Amino acid sequence: MRSMCCFSALLLLIMAPVVCQGGNILVFPMEGSHWVNMDVLLQALHSRGHSLTVVRSNKSWYIKEKSSYYNTITVSVEKAVDQKFIQKVIYEIMEYERGASRLVYLFHLIVGMFGTFLESHELLGGFVSALLDDAELTTYMKDSKFDLLLTDPCWGGGAIVAKYLNLPLVYNARWLIAGDAHLAIAPSPLSYIPVTGTRYTDRMTFVQRVNNMILHVITQIQLSWVIKDVYQKVCEKYLGPDCDYYQLMIDADIWLMRTDFVFDYPRPTMPNVIYMGGFQCKPAKPLPQHLEDFVQSSGDHGFIIMSLGTFVSELPADLANEIAATFAKLPQKVIWRYKGEKPDTLGNNTLLVDWMPQNDLLGHLKIKLFVAHGGTNGIQEAIYHGVPVVGIPLFFDQYDNILRLADRGGAKILSLSTMDKDDNFLKAIQEVLTEPSYRNNMQRLSRLHRDQQLTPMDNALFWMEFVMRHKGAAHLKAQGNRMPWYSYHSVDVALFLVGALILLLFTVFFLLRCLCAAVCKCKAKRD
Ligand SMILES: *[C@@H]1O[C@H](CO)[C@@H](O)[C@H](O)[C@H]1NC(C)=O
Ligand SMILES: *[C@@H]1O[C@H](CO)[C@@H](O)[C@H](O)[C@H]1NC(C)=O
Image 1 (cartoon, rainbow, N blue to C red):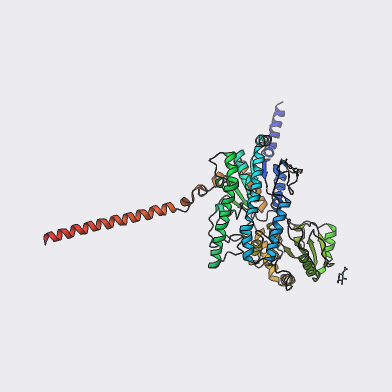
Image 2: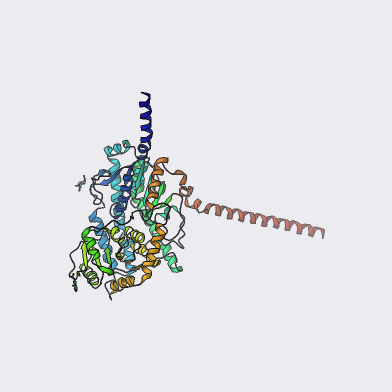
């Protein structure tokens, strides 16, 4: 009996760490390409024994309802930011990018697109309301006793749900509704931190710094507009009239940033910001046989891959023909991820595919070049494997992403509006293929990126588990985030000190004058 008892105790002891380790995580993701990298995190969390529940709308097109590694909470909505919505936005932006001058393009992006931007967040606000209005879903969420809410703050709903359920909050972040997430919590001198969209490096001329400031102010106005118009209202409705959404938003426990200082420019940061740039990168696995055969048939010339990302599956026909014709002139083999109509000019060295194992191809010995649109996932994989890039940025942060590689000598940037003129595309490809510095620079970035104590993924997992173990990371949150701007920048103190100094000077001046007058009077009397 006794030994039995001991045995059970022993068993319990062995089991205990396993039982404790499995956390229960609620995930409030963003759709589209952002889901792709969230999904990588979720698979890793699942393999560590955590249980995952993903909130999605019944119109989600990336987030599947059934999965082997997560449960779902599906919210029914009439309208959502779905495929149709995003596709419309993207083709509109591409049209402008191709046709208009940079100024018109920027104006369109800032003013013209703002309505669409606002609309997408309104749909999200509606989504959060639908979730929290559903008594069955909220009871289910409360009963599930989650340990953590993981969200992408590019969509602002996660912070509200976390507060509603009183859960520690971890961000899988790069953007915070509008603009770089750093700008909301870390000191960010605009003198050397280029705002995304400016297309500047960290070395700016005076005029560039002026533009940088202007774009920053515009972005901040847009941000506060969206917050006031959408999230603050939802916040007040479900969390009480005293709720301040901005405060809630920047109060996350840990910010897992999808960047690092091999990719991005060095800048001030905060204790609860953890860099996990490249967390999705893995050593290459062997290719499927048909791809391996195709790649091997390239001989010593090697091969090129081209992908314009998850959103753009088709290009205007004339552009697709131009690209295909250029590829046909090359001795390399080309694998092109493309879903549109087969271009007439397609050469027999080019393979069109619906999908490709990008990471495995980039890690292949024969890869020579990556023609990319500059999405973060692809850029990080190019850094990890040290493959030079010809970038064709289409929208959002893509130009700025490729610029960071180009600035380090690892990439060449083309614009959609000029790539089909004067053989620009062919020239860029040939330059990057023949000039060894491009490859050497990317290999250098790759070595720097890989030389870390922990892999970015292990680091991210550690911090999420840390937050679950300690029920948050309040000790890492700086007080500065809770101060009004005038206290944060010590404007009140400066005004007080200047005031005190002026008062003191006045007093001294006044006393001296009195003294002078007294002395003069005295003198006059004696005389
Ligand atoms: C999602 O839910 C809404 C509201 O209940 C319904 O009208 C719509 O048809 C549903 N959509 C899908 C794709 O199931
Ligand atoms: C591909 O096309 C080129 C020129 O058009 C031709 O010389 C070559 O034999 C073709 N290769 C194959 C495998 O068909």
